[in-house]
Length: 292
Image (cartoon, rainbow, N blue to C red; front, side):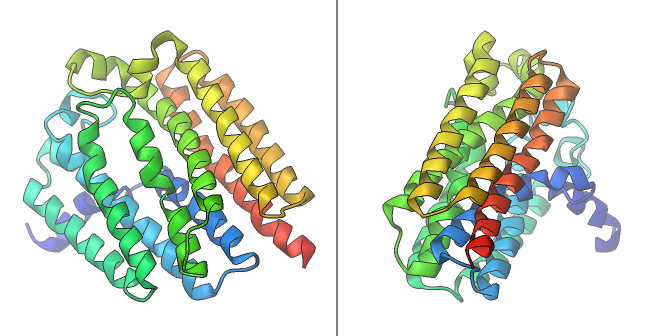
């Protein structure tokens, strides 16, 4: 089969075969963007916006491939993932690794245009991306590890703008970590029954047990408190707080989706987190324009 005929399988690997699967890219992009805006104190330089936006797509795509590679023996037994190319044999493990390396090389070339501190932070981000899929074998809450990986664009954004990573960046990263635990627990709730049957994959949805919904709500609360504190420390005003209020309202709707623990609604809750991130970013970005 020639390369053109295999493109649909590659598109499936990097989740561009359907629009809703790209929510992972936007969930990675939003905190990166609000970190970049706060670091700049104004509209960031256009080249940084483009580099970090494209970089988010590349890193998420490569991360999806590596996740599928690590889980290729299990995905065929999980309802949501059984049609993935590595699970069905439509793509080979070697193809997947080649494609992941190709995407990571492009991301690496983008990083080379920035300063040395961003480069070293990018190496940490790469290590997190490559190792995360395997943490599901032994960490009771691998979502916390994913939270660090998904939020690492925040210190990288500060490094790109300021050539340093202040305490504020780490505070925002900590807040984002709780958001990732919240939305990825909803994601894990979709697969919980299958994961328990396999007995080989760990997740927060399994570890939290009957307290899963409560844990998600508490994580949202921690996310909102830390992110709001970070925004206020950065001097943000009423527009930022309005964005946070909208995000909190969206989180309230997410609670109504996950409280019955039904697969379809838990998936909808995961996807709806895109609006939480968009509301926070809108609050951050528009606040600068309102003050200008």
